[in-house]
Length: 264
Length: 297
Image 1: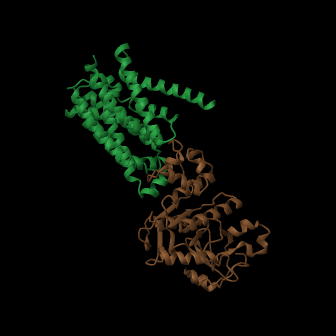
Image 2: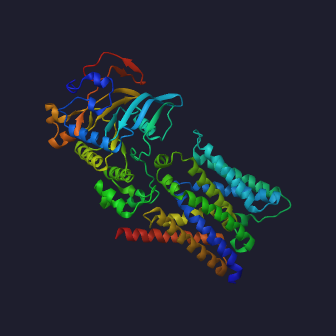
Image 3: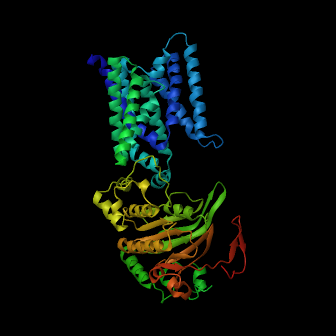
């Protein structure tokens, strides 16, 4: 039983370790809609991978990276707001992804698996690929963490301290694109952003420094992962939604506890 | 017109930067001057200046922000840049610090110059948790004791565990000042340190700056949008409105009976009046109109 679940548990833990810092960044920078857009675009990535018979990660990674980098110059586009542009990209990539999937006769993919993820069917080779990508992601984060924190606190301050903020901006979208690539198989298109922001939002109640928030966010996402997987195996609910629902319940409990303690 | 009568206007118009050239023996900041000269001869024999701007112009998308600025900051000096909103003060400051490129001219900085910069009204994101202690060791690691000492210098050590988003305006300014001190600066660069602070508070902040510059043996470059009141110990005032309109030495408030009625002796000893000597006027577009000196300037 446990050996059958082991690859899934390890992949889940890898994902949580990435989700905690990136979730914090997304919450600090208020960019959950960008995460959402990249997640939607992942569907197009999956469709392209199937078409060319690549590993899923290659197509997803390429599309996510392309869109993340495309957003940077588009942000200077003054007539349309950022969320309008993101909305355009998110839903058009979703539509094109579904069309591409439908037109590919060789493979039948269960759209539910794409939307909700399927963490329980992971194999060791999957885990090794995800581990490699996670390592890349963590090294970018480790290299830029301090700058990212300064940038999230105040763009002006980052400008003063480091001259240009361009590198940090690129680093942030890069890790976000990598995260989507890692997460798509595990939790699916619809729930990627939830896994990012809910544990970090929970952590915000209890933290006074960025690193505290990082650690609490990690603990809360690991907790959600384990509870979600446990429920999924024992009560037969879909795993991805189970994990996110656990995270949501933790969030609500934290809010209540926070409300009670701050009043007294 | 009252002020500045014992400062020869030719000295001002020639913009002589050398300390000894301002021949005001009765000046209350005379002592500070002597100290400045001492510290200059002791510590800095190779370079008398810390930052020097030569004919600096900066344009943004073909719109000139500042043109043909010449100025020099020597060790231990206090320089105040004044000018109306949009005059290019912050731009000049950032250029002097090397944060933005100049369009023409050049800026020289003394080698391994440690700059403590206190930016103007930083906007801080409310979404990120950040206490004062973490904030002060963000860009450079410092021990708790070092941070506490810096906060003590600006009398806000009790706030070390506060979240920065919850600080009042005055507290935040003092935390930013402490942050600038952590660099062990040769020059403190303060962008509007007394913005939105009442006259008593201004006197207190000027007092603090004066103490700090003696303790840290640093020069001070300050920006203020108050066109007439500056810190009493200021060595040189530059009035900026896209170019340097005039420059010179301020007069201490206490020398003018009219102002003595307005200020307590404590305030009067900290704050000085700067009298402008403009030979031109700026219209709404910022263009220069030359005219005879106005009586009510």
